[in-house]
Image (tube, rainbow, N blue to C red; front, side, top):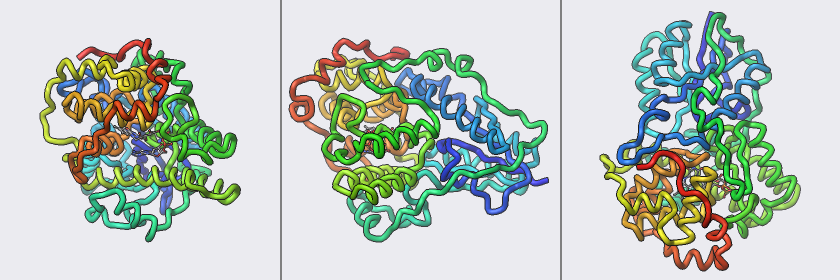
Length: 432
Ligand SMILES: Cc1cc2nc3c(=O)[nH]c(=O)nc-3n(C[C@H](O)[C@H](O)[C@H](O)COP(=O)(O)OP(=O)(O)OC[C@H]3O[C@@H](n4cnc5c(N)ncnc54)[C@H](O)[C@@H]3O)c2cc1C
């Protein structure tokens, strides 16, 4: 009896998921997700905060619950463990004599090393197959080889727009191979994992509540395109700071893989076919290209994405930045919104990051680590890639930090955003 394991990581959906597209379906399938226990327990060096904060953990759990429901409808199930991922997957493969483990080739050196360690441990007994997925391009449809990825985004975008057609997204499987008899299944309730995450409530001033899972992601996509046509004005509104619809807010679903970039791309093209394309629909795909670019750059860069270790200790100016007490209203509002909602507009992210690096002389890696803790949409390639880009280090090293005073005059001229968050409680979580 052939048994395979689908190891889910940042790809928590059924539709357009190569993890579940079997050339020859196995006789039994075990689907597993392992939350790395170190994300809950250990603080990052130099910063007393868990890698995964309450907003993201809650979104993750909602996504896992829905994923399990969809797998059950198709004759499968989901096992969720909190432990060392390699140990859990290797033990399962050995216990059930699995012939193959399928796992997405995620960006991030920890993710990469985990797969390499698993393959070494199971060598000769069980094949470990890396799949692509989630992005506009996979390694075979990418306009350049990963090793030849241009150093600038513009060069990448020009090549992508000229040479490559984004492949269409695929459907969800109708049925899946049965669950191995006797195999454990299910997930622990979130309040047992983290009471803080179970009780997490975003501040209503953010005017939005994210809910994990494929269905909520598709509903948000429908809202932005078909229900409100907000996409038609995206290029004009995307630098907004207050409100629910100035940008798509699809980032948490994309980051957790509840939606793939190709599904968003297909929806934009379908909307253009009905209503006509404009500079806004173009710009939305342009932003998805940025996401692809950072993803493939992270693959190319490996450990250097995170800069040289060790991290310095966080000093007083970093604490003031983190808590939204710098005295710069735009930045303080951003840092309070981030802590209170787990999300931030792109304009606010850019200004908060710039201010830390340029005005406070802070270490960009501490800023990226704090964002990693807070963000509901944390994505290793996009977060660390954007921070590097703004700090002017790495593959496309040029000074990029912004004049925050000038930005406040342009994007928050009457101080509405600053006033909205002025009274919000400063950063949650453990003090440094
Ligand atoms: C310092 C910093 C840290 C960031 N960290 C993250 C992160 O951890 N996760 C994350 O998804 N994005 C990150 N971004 C990128 C961007 O700010 C968010 O993707 C965006 O604000 C999410 O809102 P949205 O879904 O409404 O985006 P929209 O403007 O509607 O864009 C649509 C989608 O395009 C992608 N996208 C847009 N801008 C970027 C960008 N600059 N880089 C990569 N992808 C982009 C996202 O997937 C986004 O959902 C970061 C940006 C900065 C400056």
